[in-house]
Image 1 (cartoon, rainbow, N blue to C red):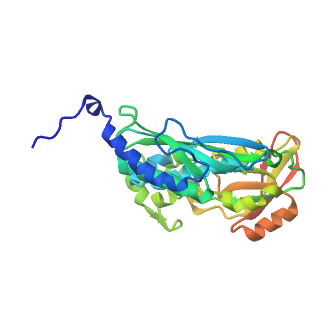
Image 2 (cartoon, rainbow, N blue to C red; image 1 turned 60 degrees about the vertical axis):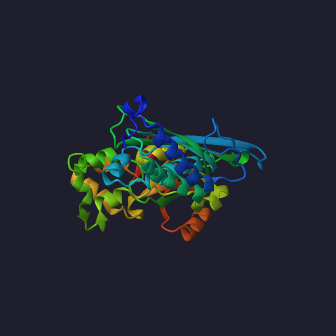
Image 3 (cartoon, rainbow, N blue to C red; image 1 turned 180 degrees about the horizontal axis):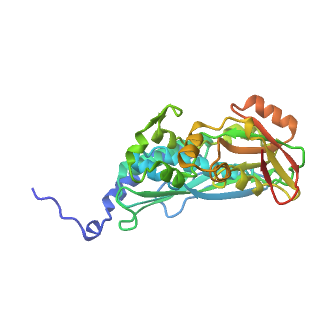
Length: 341
C-alpha cells in the first residue's frame, strides 16, 4: 500500500499534522494549571482571565528567554527542565516588585516540530506554573525550517502578575543601615552559558558535557542543566517587610542591585559571607576569568538579594534554608553602587 504523498507545505518543512498532535498534548499538560479565573481553553484566538478580589490592583508584566542554555539541552536531548527555568526566571522578576503571578504565555520556535519534544518543554512550564499558582494560559508553537536547524529551538515567556498598589515594592524604602540578605542560587540559572560553552569547548566537542568533575559530583552537563531556582514561595510571607529585592541574572550582583537602589544609597557586599558553588570556581580556573568579570557575568551562588530591616533579616535567616547575611546598605560615596570586598 502506497504511502500518502506529502503536501506542498510539508515538503517545505512545516508539518500541520504534527502541529495538531502537539496542541493535543499541550492541552492536557496545561489544563491542571487553570483556576476558576481562566475562562477559555487552549486553542481560542485569545486567552481570558478574570481579575477579582483586589482593591486597587496593579498588573506587573515581564518577558524573558532561556538563552543559550538551550544548546546544552539540545546536545543532551533533555528538554523537561528548560520550561522550569523560564517560569522561575519570569516569576522572580515580578516578585522583585512584590507581585504574585497570575498567568503566563510561552513561545516555542523550532526548526522541526517534534510533538514529544514540545510536550517535554511544556511539562516543565506547567510544573513550575503549578508550584507558584500561575495559569499557563496560552502560547505559540512555531515550526520555522531554515530559521533554525532541525534539532534547535528557542523558548521565551511572558508573565503577568498582580500586586495591590500600596504593596508595590519599588526600592524607595531602602535606607542606610538596612540589612542585605542573599538567597542561594542552584547554579548558573540562565545566564553566562555562552562563556561556559567557550570555556569548556562544548560547541567543538559535545562529549565535554559527559565529563565528571569531582568537585561537582556529577557530569558537567547535569550541573549546567540544574533549573533556575524560584524564590516566590520562600519570600511571599515576608513581602510586607521587604524594602527592595534584586533578582541576580545577567550582570551579576554589580549589574542588578543598582536597579532597585534609591539615590544616595550603595550596597557593601562581603564576598566571604557565602560559599561560592564549585561550578563557578571551575569556570574561573579553566577559563582564566578575572574576579571582576565573574561577578559581572554570573550570580556566583546568590540568586536573589533582599534589603530589609535588621529584625526582618534575622527572621529570614532563621526560616529560609541557605539564606545568608551578605552585606549592608551604606551611604553612596562616589559612583560605585555595589562594593564587593
